[in-house]
Length: 149
Image (cartoon, rainbow, N blue to C red):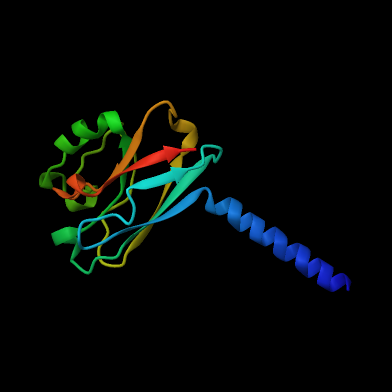
């Protein structure tokens, strides 16, 4: 009977830990139709950090249509997209380094994944934040909002 009680208690604890952990991360995909799997990511602002677990589900080669995730303030979006240039290189996501970028994944090829961790202590919750793809031209469709709850 003690074993059963221990087992149930342990299982309940593990389930609660997984539920709490899931509030501080989100699984996001980018596909070959130049779309993210959602246009809104809800972020629990009580988390100290938030992870966007990004996967490129496209089967197109990285140099033709790679995808990434860039996080920035909404107010910085227009300036940042004006900096996108193939001369910056695929390894930089065609975007030069900028203090306006809150976080950025590398450009990913087919079925590649990357976990982007955002330090929420560095964000100003009175501002609006967006996530987008910096592959040239993708940002027009591949854009979404971070909503802090």
